[in-house]
Image (cartoon, rainbow, N blue to C red):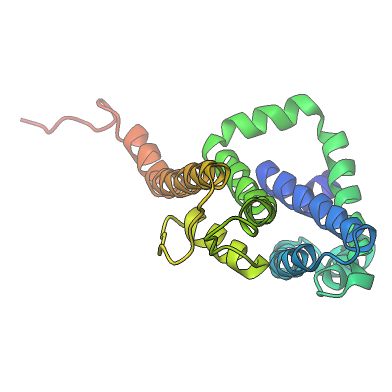
Amino acid sequence: MPKRRSELKSTGYEIFVGALSVLSIVNLVLMYAVVDDEALDTVLWVMNAVFSAVFLVDFAYRLTTAPQRGAYFFRHFGWADLLASLPFAQLKILRLFRIIRVIRLFRELGARTIWRTLVRDRAGSALYALLLMGVLVLQFGSLTMLYLEQYAPGANITTASDALWYTVVTISTVGYGDEYPVTNAGRFAGGLMIVVGVGIFGTFTGYLANLFLAPRKGDREDAEPGAEEPPSA
């Protein structure tokens, strides 16, 4: 059990990667279940590229931090992590190994331990939760915006690439203004995207502040009054 637990990174990170794996499998089903939908195909292709990049970084992270790299690669499905990172539809099914590993490790830790860990690392957990929300908004927000806007009179969001671009610049709070919704429903959806984007960057800023200030808090505790001898007269 200790060896298996050593595979586990931060709890929030594992949940984030596991959720992305589930979403990538859902996208694989959608890709084959829904045919003749060019907009959906474009969005899923972009999301697959995003997932592939994230999973490749995840593989490199796990490999470099594994206590025994050979054991991780051969015995703990590291090879499956590597192949599943490649942007080929035939290999996406291997992402199930990520989900299986996370479920197994979480079952060993227990729900109570997981919850305590998430609460203890509130800043990191909130960051991963908002990053996951950002990924969900990028995919489903783009599709929603396109279906709401593409046939509206005077619409300028008429293709999947337009919708993806609008979603990216809105979540990133850049807001160039070259693409914008013209329907009330589209404006409402755009407002929600702005809220998500502000939340992501606000949480990221707080996470960085907590990351840099945490060691200083420990230093202050070591330097409590009375810790040093008063100067002699």
